[in-house]
Amino acid sequence: MQATRIRPDTRPTDIRRLTAAGLSAVLPGLGQAFNRRPALAALFIIPSLVLIAIGVLLVQMQSPARLGAWMVTPQVLGTLLTLNLLVLIWRLIAVGQAFLDTRRTGPAGWLGIVGVIIIAIVVAVPHFAVYRYGSLVGDTFKIIFSGTVLGALDDPRTDRPGPGAGERVNILLLGIDSRGDYTADLTDTMMVASIDPVGHTVSLISVPRDLIDTPLGGGDTFGPKLNGLYAYAEAHPETFPAGGIRTLQVALGELLGIPIQYYAQVDFKGFVKMVDAVGGVDIVAPRSFDDPTYPKRGRGSRGFSITEGPHHLNGQDALAYARSRKALGESDFTRQARQQQILVALKAEATKGGSLLFQLPDLLDAVGKAIHTDIPLDRLPDLAAVIDEVGREGVTSVVIRAPLVRGIIGPYGSSQKPRLVRIRAMAAGLFSAPGVPPTPWPTPEPQPGLKPSPTTSP
Image 1 (cartoon, rainbow, N blue to C red):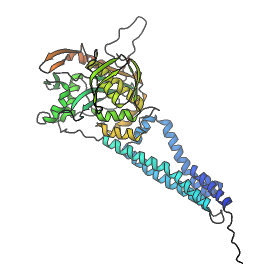
Image 2 (cartoon, one colour):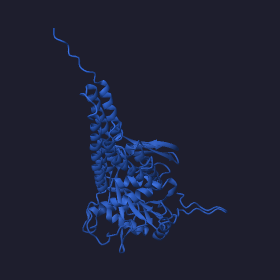
Image 3 (cartoon, one colour):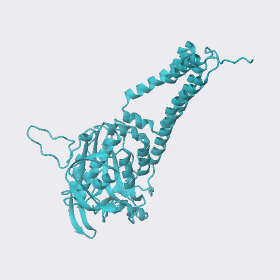
Image 4 (cartoon, helix red, strand yellow):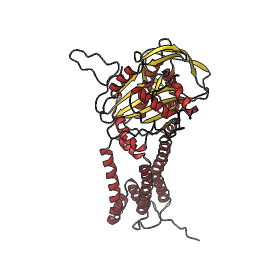
């Protein structure tokens, strides 16, 4: 009669192996210390602690926004992704050595084999996630910060140097209506945002789409409505060799009496995706209105209405709130104020937790497809740090309206004619010297015994 072969019980050894491997998965070297291998433990744990200390030091020394923006620059991000791979290999080696340590006698059983595979997967998953999200961030920022302007050619009128250290950074913000049902792209939203890196404030001004007779520099003016200048310049390169965006930068710079160094362009489809990607925005409508003529894209119907008070808006409704202008009592000027309100609300949602790093893949994808800008990546850390420190009270917003402009009915229909002297006087206070609080417009009347707040928006 053949004797039955009894397999040895490997569970005690497997448990010890897995305990050592698990400890090294938490921190390379702990498993080696558990196995009483002091030399190996020091070899693994010292580099790990040094790396952790460097990370903690960076977090303590920099704001989340500055650190995050520094991390997405191409050189740094590439280095971090390579380091991420090396750390993964380092951790897997530590796990494997702790599990296979020769002090553990006998073969590993199924419990040990399955367990160490699970530990290896648990170790690897975060690193693969970091690589995936890091690559996504890098690709997105390469698209956004392309460093190019469509249609732009060399033009001495637009060769403006970037701002120096401590100088205001002025950015043209454009909303392009390119949804396919117009014959030309119209810049229906035109703002200039000015970031003061010394005073940590932002000045924001909206320019009417119906502005006419806009100065172009050198004594030239653009007679038709300003929202058509971009498309006109793109269609007439012989007259505007700098292209549409650069021409708008020059024109608005001449209008306000400031240099505009950069631009950021967003299309309305991308705007909707951005708002939806952050889960919507919170606003407080100052009054109720009903616009039955507003076209709802993709809904087969028309009309948009909102009641006075707080609201949470999805992407389509946020776009409607920012664009509607034909309701009773509403106008292009009230719409511009709503656009600024949506912009501040979107910034608040995207920077929750104090970081400008977008965490959601949907948001990254939306941003990459929606925004194009020529802001250099090496300026991003400083700008992100300033914006992160700017709360709602640090934003001074102005809408160019009467008496800065005069409404007329002329060859281009209902239009707004600029009063340049008044506009530039307002802009001089709004875009004050770095470190000097911007002056809101209209300037509040001082009350006896009280000083007006320099950052209160009208």
